[in-house]
Image 1 (cartoon, rainbow, N blue to C red):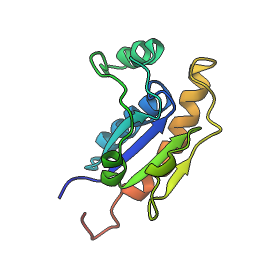
Image 2 (tube, helix red, strand yellow):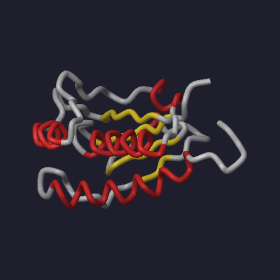
Image 3 (cartoon, rainbow, N blue to C red):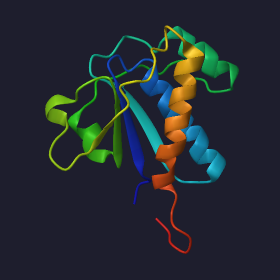
Image 4 (cartoon, rainbow, N blue to C red):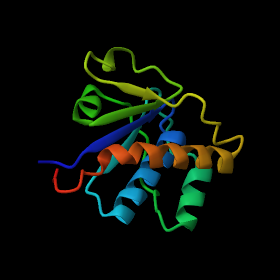
Length: 138
């Protein structure tokens, strides 16, 4: 069985969704939880935002070589949870798929640190659903 996956989607798949996926995976590793995160965009840019690459690289997270991709039906189908940042998934949000909207997260290009803090706080709350109850396994 594959680990639970959270799909983070933003318009360009180049900043907010990237930060959220990186933060989720960092938290999963720190907590010893087998889970993963992926990022995508509804209208993906050609590259991850340079400020995101540079700031995460300072923390030892190397995203060089990764590229945003267009969110697909397969991405949504494989996700245990879907989070969007100010974008509509349209037909991809089929019945039975709950899309959590984080539309009020500030733009990364306007205030990286404020956006990062908002994303970190929400990922920490979201992460709670990934932890197994004591005495159970996933």
